[in-house]
Length: 375
Ligand SMILES: [Zn+2]
Image 1 (tube, rainbow, N blue to C red):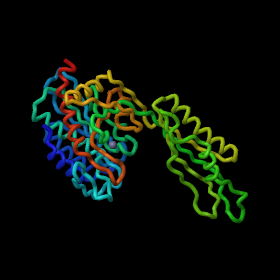
Image 2 (image 1 turned 120 degrees about the horizontal axis):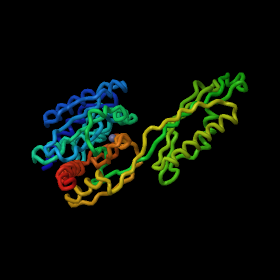
Image 3 (image 1 turned 90 degrees about the horizontal axis):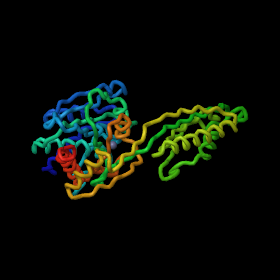
Image 4 (image 1 turned 45 degrees about the vertical axis):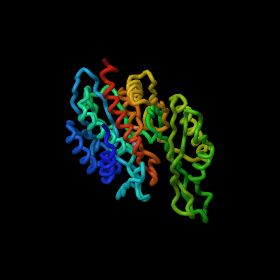
């Protein structure tokens, strides 16, 4: 039912069209064309305008063949990370790889290829379903921006599957952390470093003291923290008057996230106070976490479908944010399924074909299970 060669061919066509975040227009048009050809009613929202991109989220519907059954959402994101232009993808055994100078685009075009192939199989087999909602977002890689600006009035699904997982087949990511963005701007005083350094106040040094006092990395089994960017200074002979640090903290436990965030803020404030410097703190919730269990219908349905294929699922607690965080926050229970994407966000990235094929079969099995599950 799933045609491996057809999927591989389609994936190669998809990754040949670049779709960096906020520049997904050409790729979105190509995907829309395919969805229309598969019989879906395709709409766009206005997310692109809201976030300064050239393409919007796509919301497409395959009309129900059994209207009593619930509508399911299938999601993937249209954008990729860099370097993602002039991709020369090639098949290497069971993998599709780039020439080593770019990503291959498996994140998230494996997911898109899986969805398209499943839709094709659904049509060929005339399965009973309550409607399929395909939501393809823009700008996921730069902070889930498309999903954050999704026009929910265009959606009607009751639960969703996010096709943005990895290469291990049969894996369901049922939980993801809460995350805060934590940015600091330490303000000192500029002075000539050789003539009158005592008139200056070194913002880099103050920031470094604050940073050194922070617990970072893996804080406990639920919590992580990082300072990932430092910017500051103009020249070796100028005492720097400004230093910025960009960081984050994540936790599956909201209380622990609050405590870790507090700790980082206090460490920087103490360093600033001690030196007589100022510190501006920009603190924001990036996304909310979620946790679903084996008994939740969205997990149970995927599990039963997998058993129909003779496999047991692995329920996985994820460490990253994805569109699933936003969907769950909006009350649309969603979990992340395997797609075949490996070594993502690197030039060694690959698409693992057997998992792509398996995930497409899995989606079809989910739709085949619908009637029994909800009957
Ligand atoms: Zn992704």
